[in-house]
Image 1 (tube, rainbow, N blue to C red):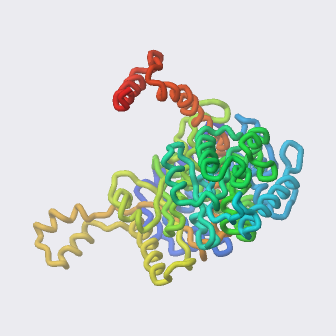
Image 2 (image 1 turned 180 degrees about the vertical axis):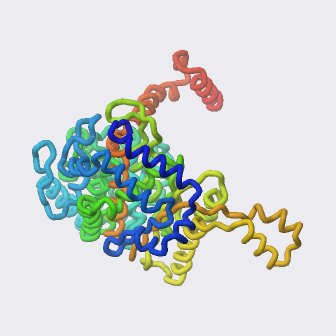
Image 3 (image 1 turned 30 degrees about the vertical axis):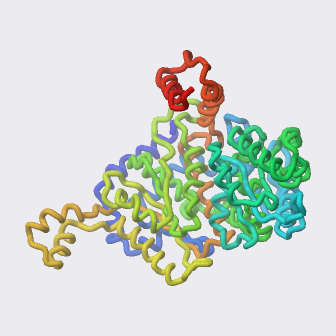
Length: 548
């Protein structure tokens, strides 16, 4: 936040924070009988409840003022207009084009990208349908039953998350598998579960040089050659890549190469041909419904007033906690087992995007950015780390996600699931006072001395904030909406922090050092003189463990 014009907005928020430190969320509800009515937004069958936060109408106004002080609306317009918003790489960020279902022109570098986007989408979905129908077969004439996506980062987390989330919509004759880790165990364990004669591999790498992806791809290629012969590679592999020469050298035909563009960041690429494995699993219509969901949010984000704009509100609330309350983490707890990978997906989306300490102007930031994002499905999380949420010294704001109606799940069990979700947000907000604990223990017949010992351990401070997303069902369209909400939230935060959310230079140094160290790990005679003492010591001990 290094713009001088922000001073007034920031000072106002700092003063308001000082004035509101002793006001609890329960106090805010007690003072305002209309609080829920005024602190939620409904978008079709999705409700966003932000009433259980440490904000009042003054906070709300000052946060909106902050967004206006950074000229957020102009930056949003620039994003949708195809301006260079990824400044360090000189690129626009037009993932919204990938879910533009009308074909309305979207321009990047003076060129309407939509004709090419629509053509590639048609090609990818036609291929997906040929696999689903069994028209496309393997080398031995068998139709495919196993789809193995080989990627890493956005080319793995996105499709893996979505395939699990939408598992009720995946055709029963397919098993979708995802291999990402360069640890050979990842691929080896997958190969044990598949029949290579009925397996299609999707290699997802824009440059076809990503170390982890190509290491796994070459190992999978060798497995196919060993089992079916080298000629079978052309029948059992396809690619999502821009590197035509490298793909051809691998043995993949050009009609099985699918594109995405340099204006699509990896963590925003699920909407593109990176979603091929998902499209094969759920079918073209359901995949298009997923795209429609993302488009729904694009329209909402582009047009809704700031005070009723869900991604804007999500972002501003998190800014309030990260920069003024110093809450360093944010939890995402979906009460849906099929959303088990959603928190991991959001970890990359938010932490890789906004985990920055330098402004667009190249100056060190003076305020914190990018909270730690984590989560697990409820109710599992309740029996893991919710203890810290309720009684720990750190305060962690929570996003709860819950469907009103389950898909392919027992409705009676779902009643209990919903009750747990609502109970956790209520308990976090209300807590339980010492007096309430003592009265409860007394009613149970405990003696006064026993109560005095036990009561402090049963006190819940409360005043722990949370949002709740309540929606009809986890359909492809709803999943698309949820993903796009968080994407745009990240962008809003980046504007306020004045950082580039579309680059990820922080991953580069480790890659470079790994390439340098790989020969030293493999060759026990290689000199470690140039290494730091710790790395040299670890390599020496490694060689000792290996007996080399």
